[in-house]
Length: 404
Image (cartoon, rainbow, N blue to C red):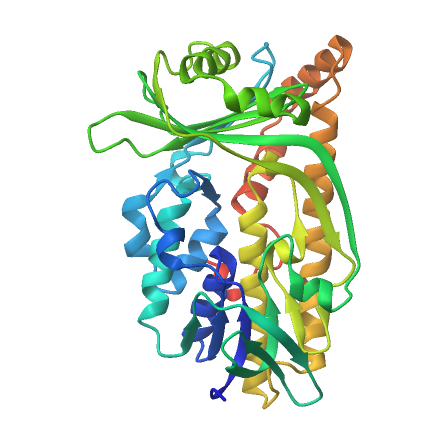
């Protein structure tokens, strides 16, 4: 039997490992269990995905001591341009110079490498890699997980951080509302002629958004962006099978001359798009974080940021409780966590779902109405500022770790 720790975190993805490190900064110990091999997860070209990190999430990374390590890998987002099919009537979200960026783009690999290296050096984290869980137990006095090699891990609180298909959530019988969009996101890295000027483009087409996200220039000085292209599920297989030349021709149709000539495209990946939200994010000695609790459309780039807000809130309530002599799995603390995070995550999920449906209406009339509305927002500085603050994640009751 391994020593009993405060948290038993099931899943060492971006959210799960950030939770372990944030907890450690507050003196909270954890077991972290994952079936994956870290070497595979941090290999070059593993998935090609990138993440937009909001201002609040960046504060979290800085506050747990990762800011200096991550800073060289960050590409600031100085502006966000939103347009309906590249027609007149776009919105430009550009903060004042003294307000800083709207966020930062990171290759997921850079985030993983930084988190994993920090975790390997942290004595309060016991990291169990390439480990299959064969049994989970949540009892009156604690929780445990039995690994495939017979080892038992014990803690006060179990945290489900395994992502959208969380077996911990399902085993706990927590109800989930879910639906599919019948869309698939195609992801690829682009190298292009013109600089992106740190602008993130969200171009809406009836089949879904076509996003161009700024990335750091390559070592050879090449200009790079991450493409997230949403296509109808029925068209996805054909799009993925296109030759690089044909694929780039389709990309060029949708982005015009924004970046000049596209020189190359990285290997493409894809994943289906769906929505899910749990009825509860807690159970007896169990808390859910990240995609285990809520999965949203990537239309606004807020999925990871929502999970990092979960991290900040859970660490806050557990830290406060332990100061009062309560253990991390105490029901009062879990109720506070759910009250704090339940409504916020649900409202963000509804907003992204509504945007997806609004911009998916295909008619010319709908497009004209959308562009009229966008033109109105463009002329309303206060409303634009509210949207920018939402994108930064600085509105509402923020956990301590997410504050500047």
